[in-house]
Image 1 (cartoon, rainbow, N blue to C red):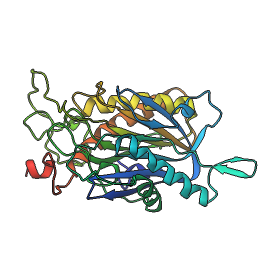
Image 2 (tube, helix red, strand yellow):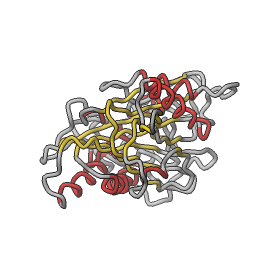
Image 3 (tube, rainbow, N blue to C red):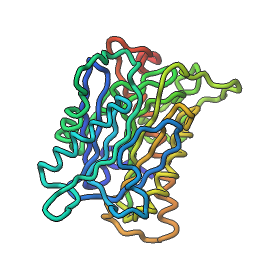
Image 4 (spheres, helix red, strand yellow):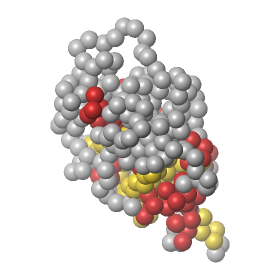
Amino acid sequence: MTPGPRNLITDVAGLRVGNASDAKIKSGTTVLTAKTPFTVGVNVMGGAPGTRETDLLAPDKTVQQVNALVLSGGSAIGLDAASGVVDALRAQSLGFAVADQVVPIVPAAILFDLLNGGDKRWGRSPYYDLGKAALTAAHTDFDLGTEGAGTGCTTNSLKGGLGSASVVLPSGHTVGALVAVNALGDAVVPDTAHFWAAPWEIKGEFGDIGAAHKFPTNWPQTKLSQHNTTIAIVATDAALDQAQCTRMATAAQDGMARALVPSHTPMDGDLVFAASTGQRPLQDDLSDPVMIGHAATTCLARAIARGVFHATAAKGDTVPCYQERFK
């Protein structure tokens, strides 16, 4: 398997991603959107999630497609980013039509980055404007690392960040992942530069130093005094219904477990959205979903490592970035 031309989630044709950040508060927002609505499922495995409109994504609910997905910093305050996206989409008459009204459907998830050294003494929440700005910036090309929802992310020992990766399957389907890495655990094997996700690395996308030869036998150290959450989107052009997207999101959670140790803790709100643009029919109703789920898992693991690998240092950081620590 090989990555798509950008090695980004936007290798899934039709998808665009926009980032907006505020360096002073060390936080930001990331929006994934498309010109036409797309099908989405969700899976939550962390013990402390913060979400908006996720109940709507169950396969038995009336609305089957969405207009955008939002990943944001700011804890519960960051959910306001989705309101900015909703208003901007409504101004473009994009959304679920109800008589003469249009209601944009914009599920969102947030992470806790309020203790990362940024100045959080805002009066009015900045996230509404960050959401609108991220939507406006949506494009097929976007930066990784200290960008968007990854701006203020941390892991136990290193800065986190915004990561993305893609793969093209032998069936011709494309799968991609987008993630804001803000984990209680670590993306690297303790006291080494080796990523836990190293076995799934493709073409040196996060340093090409390979897997560690020896793994620790002691319990991992974690930043229990802070708060966390890794939030992600996996996407494909395969024609999946909402139930199949939900299964894809469930499978992709294994990508977090492969790339972050520990993961899915009571203090994390780990969540994965799964999106389908429906542009490419399944060739085999049994084998294709299996391979797409596996691809989503490995893409997410790779994206997590890339988010940490590309993070950059900033004034007031509470932990070093990967490039700074492992020169």
